Image 1 (tube, rainbow, N blue to C red):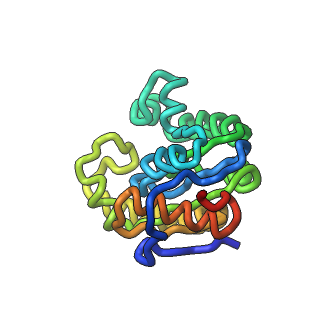
Image 2: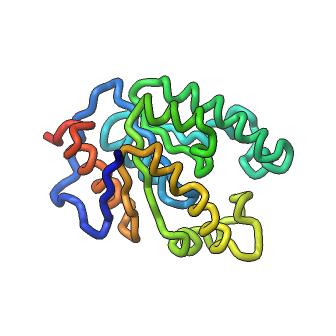
Image 3: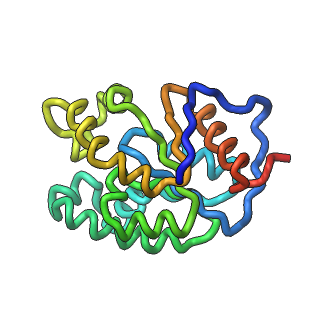
Length: 199
């Protein structure tokens, strides 16, 4: 059962000190495109001393193609095959903060690997907020249509049960700064004993 919290509730104040984590810790971030997984993931890695990997960036590195190009040349199924292989490998690596692509949860094998091998945090954002954040982004193949907001609503409708099923924690992001959102995630992980209290 996952635990939910809203960014509106705020996070613990005070200076940003390193969090105590096991060197084998694995933290996985899921959520729709634009939810802040990469930004928060990088900040979490910096705060915890863990390594950061973005699964989409890793796919691009291995294929020497952008996600948009892969969708155009191999179709979504071809891209999902690559994604599944990358997630299978990365979720076995220790000392990692992993930001996954928005559709990573579509395959059961990915959901199982994520849920069983690490701590999964679902960064949840409203479609209207996501549309605002990505209004000038032309790199998202699933949003290349007349009404990105409607498309995001449909994606959330389809994927919300999957995100919640795989997640150990749900964070309602709202509109906090990246630093505040990162602090909120860390606070929840500390309260749950996933990472140690900051010294």
